[in-house]
Image (cartoon, rainbow, N blue to C red):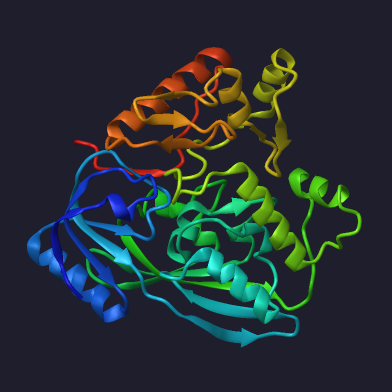
Amino acid sequence: MKFYRDKLMRKHNTLALQARADAFVCVTNDDELLESLGWARTEGVAVVVLGQGSNIVLAGDVQALVVQQAVRGIEVLDTLNSDVILRVAAGENWHELVQWTLQQGYYGLENLALIPGTVGASPIQNIGAYGVELQSVLLQVHARQIADDKPVTLDNAACQFNYRDSIFKRECKDQLVITAIDIQLSRRSSVNISYPALATFFAERPDVEPTPQTVFDAVVSIRRSKLPDPSIEPNVGSFFKNPLLRSEMAALLLAKHPGLPCFSQADGSVKVSAAWMIDQCRWKGHRADDLGVHPQHALVLVNYGSDSGAQLLALASEIVSSVHDAFGVELEVEPRIYGLNP
């Protein structure tokens, strides 16, 4: 394990933004993690934990020790009548985990295929796609406190999951290093194709039977058709969350804008499409100063060669303002932001 001072971070964030970290280390086991946390306390520097950098914006230099969590491993903890419980280390690649579970005959993650990033980042965001969220299979999150190395385990309820949200983005932000998650999957083949895009995919292909593997293949195909590859067009996927509105406000908004896609939620709120509103404000395909909005997906901001996270956030702010002016709805940025001046 090696500590790097004044580390260039362009290769460690999928937006390919240039920034420097005061210090950087990649840890591949628990001992290295403990050593890095101890080093940070001795040096008197803050700690920022990084996976594959697929959901962060570097708005400037990061005045901290950046710890890249690269501990890997998958362990079968228990096999129940029809289920299996797995412990997955934080440094595992998420999409590779989904592929592995399918190969083992463990089902439940197929709808979450091709989501970039690591397993350790998944509970922070409560990743979700095509009708499934992580919280539906997650049992526990294992972590260590940055302040004192103390091991911590949070069950599903303690994680306070919500749409693209968790306690790790609020009270526990930058307080914990997630080391592993426990998930419960089914050994019985069942599928969820209730999400409109998936339902349409299979309706248009009546000869294709919905199975965990074909759902996986469908999700991969749909995502690749809509979302740019960050290795070719640097991005972090969806840059804005779909707003959750009170049903009364959503009804008023829909009356004014009949084309607005709305989705009723279990708690009575209504999720409205941020992409549709951004598109209506004519941002899709916009490009200026080596930054832009992807021509195929209005939620995706693309870095076409800029070094400046501050400029990217300025573009995001313009989009937020225009949507608020047009619809009275406040968009929320989805990725986590580091490097802002205090």
